[in-house]
Image (cartoon, rainbow, N blue to C red; front, side, top):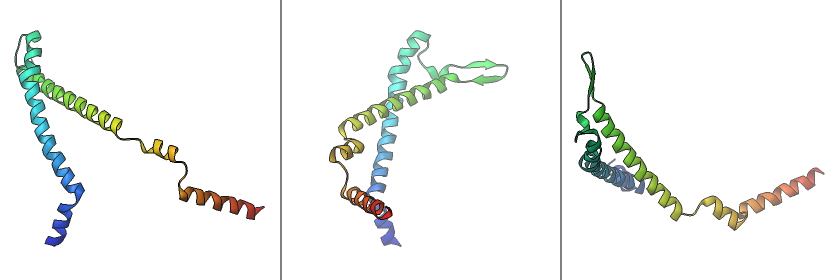
Length: 125
């Protein structure tokens, strides 16, 4: 059982996933710092407040802390934009498989299947 566990952990997919999670956590911390230390003060200049997380409105005894929600929305938008840029960059660097297949022409298997279809059509006539 220990041997199987070692093999499972040593697989590339598990290691890649672990690295991705660690980098993602570190990246999230960087984005939160960016939002709270740079973007929120800029927004706060226009709103007259420095900390968006303190923005609250009340209806009766209920308090709605929309400032914290705005912080999280800003965090999400920044992360989503960076991921978009990364995917766009990766797509630009990596060739599309469909284009490669069109350039190469039919594979050997496709040629053989075509020949088989032609032979079957001749037999039916």
